[in-house]
Amino acid sequence: MHAPNLNALGTVIARTLSRRTSIKYVAGAAIATALGMADRAKTALAASPARPTEVSQVRQLSGLDGVALAMEWTPDGTLVNVESTLGLSRELATIVARYGAAVNGLAPGFADVCARSTGIEATPYRALIVYGGEWAAVIGSGHRGVWVDPTRADINEVVRAVEATDPRR
Image (cartoon, rainbow, N blue to C red):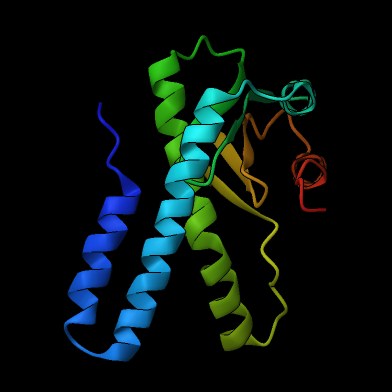
């Protein structure tokens, strides 16, 4: 599958927005710049191997009780590392990484809305738990997540472990 050139996409957005107002042009130019930076970062990540510390953190998460899948992805959803006891194909792991990145993109806004509407402090976003059927997914803000059997795992321990691997902490 061919990845779109994000810098070109940002330029098109900027031109479209610039036809409307100068303020939107500035916003469009900022989007173009950000997308260009993301495009260059994606290229750099693809060219460089994963750092050993990242692999060991994913391996550390996979060793927790009840964890069947531990993975890391980039902000755009590119799979970086995966450890699984499920026999998960690389193709399916790539799809799951995109899911994790989508959650990372939406969860901070969700936490902010919850905090503003209820008055209960829910920011900054650190992790989101999705629990359904026989599985739970713990998606951390640091682009790492685990899929666990909640009957075997201590969810609080898993959340703490995922949070501890956040490179921004």
